[in-house]
Image (cartoon, rainbow, N blue to C red; front, side):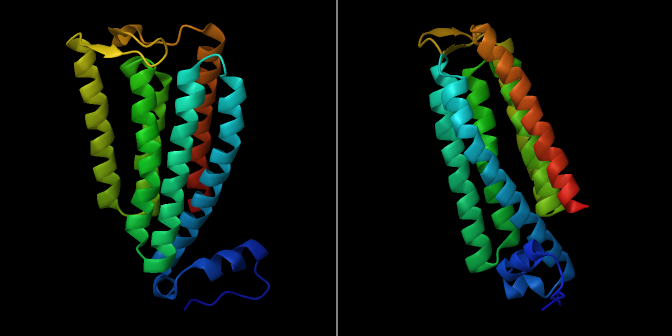
Length: 210
């Protein structure tokens, strides 16, 4: 097992204790394990803060407050599952990929309900490829990049073909281009919050990596 000095920062000694011995024996997997643990902690903390924001900041738009809260809870389940897989079975790559499933699902579902290819929620899909490259390996990063690109392409084709969809805000079928939130204040909050959270997440994981 890699050696960690007794005078190392307390949080580093705590993280060191959470790394399975199998992964701690290799410098590369040990480093990625620490990054994964920090990322899981920060992502889970973000989810905890998001719930009250969704409940009270978007109370006039149920598709954001209700469905958004459910998606945050689903993401938290994915994060918890990732930690269990990492801790019990030492499956670093699998744990890293499982952690991204919740973010990907949240991006796809929320974009589908709030404007499709025009929704600011699509920015959430930028997070999984970045995290996958840093937390797992190049193969997983490329797979997530391909999946995200394909998802955006499909949404664009659906819009171009002029299909109609169930509107999650008002409950009737309308063209995807018309699914933009019509409550100006809520739409403005979402356009600010989602890019900001995306930027914080991407910059955060790169800072942790460095």
